[in-house]
Amino acid sequence: MRAIVIYATCEGQTERIAKRCADVMRRAGVATDTYDVTRNDVAELAVESFDAVMLGSSLHYAEHDPRIAWCIREHRQQLASIPTAFFSVSLGIISEHAKDRAEAEWLADEFLHDQSFNPTRRACFAGALRYSKYGWLKKRLMRWIAEKSGSKTVTTQDYEYTDWNAVNAFATDFTALLIGNTTERLQSTLAS
Ligand SMILES: Cc1cc2nc3c(=O)[nH]c(=O)nc-3n(C[C@H](O)[C@H](O)[C@H](O)COP(=O)(O)O)c2cc1C
Picture 1 (cartoon, rainbow, N blue to C red):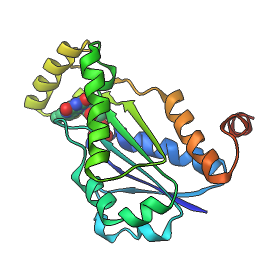
Picture 2 (cartoon, rainbow, N blue to C red; picture 1 turned 90 degrees about the vertical axis):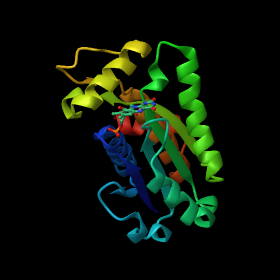
Picture 3 (cartoon, rainbow, N blue to C red; picture 1 turned 30 degrees about the vertical axis):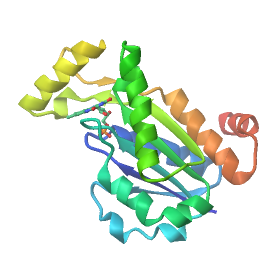
C-alpha cells in the first residue's frame, strides 16, 4: 500500500495539515509521500503509482487551487477506483457568522462537484491568519475580513485556528479505511 497527500498552499497552513496527515498515515504503517503542487509541476506527478490519494487545498478569494482541480480531472478514473480523501482549508469555516461557515462548506462541495469527484472522505479545516507573510495590501484586506468574521485583527502577530485533533481524527479515519482497521482501534494503537 502506497499513499500520497497532494496539496496546494500559499502561506503554508495546508502544507502543515498535509504533513500531519502523512505523519499519521506513516505511523500506522502506510508508506505515504507528500507533493506540493505549488512548488512542483503537478503534470509530473505519477498519481497512478499510488493506491490511495488524499488531496488538500486552501481557499483564496472563494476559490480552491486550480492545480488540485486539474489533478483531480486528469486522474478522475483512477481516483474513482481507489480510496480518496479531500480537505479544504479556510477561515470562513470558523467565522462567527453561520452564513460564512455554510459558504465555506458549500465552496468545498461545489469544488468537488465541479470536478465530478466524490472522495471517500472529506473535511473542512480552519486555517491560519499569517499577517507576517502578507504584503501591505493583503494585510489590510485580511484584517478587514478578520474583523467581519470575528477573528483576530492585531496584525503584529500570526494566529493559527487549525483544530489539530480534528486533523488527526480525519487522517486516522482515512488510514483505518486503508488498512482495514476500525478508527477506534487504530486511534488507541497510535496513542500507545
Ligand atoms: C488573500 C487571501 C484570500 C483568502 N480568501 C479566503 C476566502 O475567500 N474564504 C476563506 O474562508 N478564507 C480565505 N482566506 C483564508 C485562507 O484560506 C487561510 O488563511 C488558510 O490558512 C490559507 O492556507 P494556506 O497557507 O495553505 O494557503 C484567504 C486568505 C488570504 C491570504
